[in-house]
Length: 260
Image 1 (cartoon, one colour):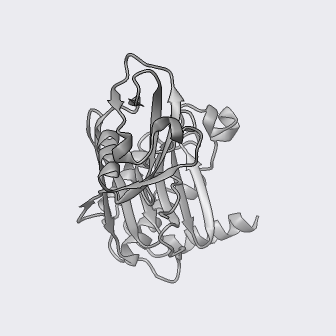
Image 2 (cartoon, helix red, strand yellow):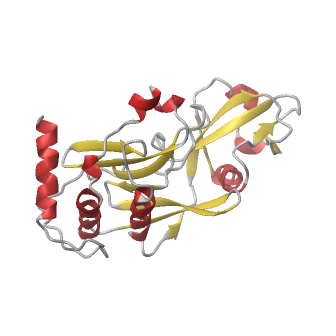
């Protein structure tokens, strides 16, 4: 009951600001209304696509758009085929507060609940679905595409998130966590030869071990493969054993550990 009351009061306060129905992100929101965790790893907002793969396959997924506590917005830009790039930018407090006002008032995000568990039992058993997370004023609200959204809500919200970054910078990783898992040979999957000397470890040695931190030329090679090749990509070092490789990048991929 307390959570519901706080949410209602926040929405009413935001609505009272009188911002336009179709926002162009002007600085119109009272700064005293909305607060968020300012730490760089705190997720204030996230528009994501989940489901449809096993836990290992999801390790290096990149959310569609994330806003972090340090006002950094990071988003995925699809380029066609298997190619994509990751862009980022910084936004002002006023822009972020107006975006939150848009979510809560214009889109009524608090009126939609997290419904996937009641439909499928758990997200891991679900097909591909969309989700939106918002954490402000010490409260986290999660909702998904099974909660009664109209068919265009996610696209609208995602578009507004990406528009926050008006001077995007192309992301290039300085380092990342690498995990491997054995997979059966797949004649439909692209195969890449693993260079253990350059990567600093062999696939067999990394199997079952904790994720290893990789940087320099090695991480750029893995990042290029991740951005330009199908997710079915397999690596081998002996042409008889094959592995899937997951690349987790701090501040980019979902749930990645911080850099060592």
